[in-house]
Image: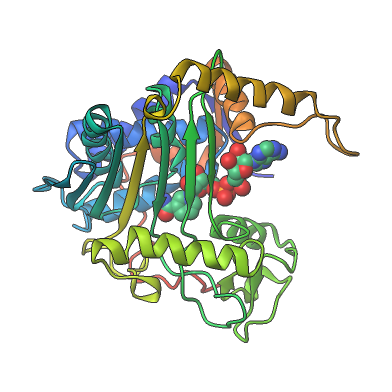
Length: 353
Ligand code: NAI
């Protein structure tokens, strides 16, 4: 078992922020990105927490992220806009796009903001929660690097293209549903490789497109629920890629191919003000009622209770804020060191053993 160390969230934040700055990221952006990584780890979404830091640092140091992006907000209609991100840091670009979205939704009740050209933006739940805390329903989708075979295919085509939807709830934190459209994240395959464990044959395929239980043979991930997940990931690419005039499918830049140039990724944020449809207070009360009724649902064998989407992350978040976050000691040593990155991602084949 890997050794871990527990850090209080403010301590982890300071260490991550420092590393971002060491890599060259300006202060405000380092703060925003550090906030999101700590949020992900605090929620137990470790695939999108501090484990990503040395990748980001390498990309920043090598010029793959525009440090002073010349962003442009282009309102194309009463409720539609494109936020041009100039391949800036994903978290920083998304925050600005959302802020514009908040102004638009307050005025027109609806806002669809397409983010055009940015770097990896991390866990969608971070943005959805912010929007839902303001009382809005929020949907987001983004492109990611091609790693998944289409249903019935043997070659990778789509990314793990995540979809998330958040909604406010009375007397409770928002309900936030947030998932990749692949069965498992690539990080889980890496984890199985490092532990020399077999994987379920429902996760991934080998070079011939055959399901495999050997993590070393993985050459592509599988979509969730066969043709349904495959359909969803295609729709994500249509909305967050094609609609914005960006590369799509297998033409989306790979995460590790070239860390010296921008990734040109797309994302959308759809914000809805419930008050344009119903009494907003009633709306939140009814969501609470739904949650309460789900909690009263008799658990199936092997389950302790029914949870609503995002609830386990919320419980974990509260525990982490109180008691700290467990991170691998090797990452802690990296955080404390003067090493900016390990120079291990540029040009790497994601599937190589
Ligand atoms: P996951 O499989 O851990 O969870 C998916 C959803 O199911 C969540 O809303 C979770 O709250 C809910 N859930 C899980 N267990 C539950 C239970 N027992 N009862 C009720 N609900 C439950 O998430 P996944 O697919 O591994 O995604 C992790 C993160 O990766 C997400 O934040 C996603 O946005 C992010 N991601 C980001 C990408 C990017 O390029 N920016 C690409 C792919 C994923």
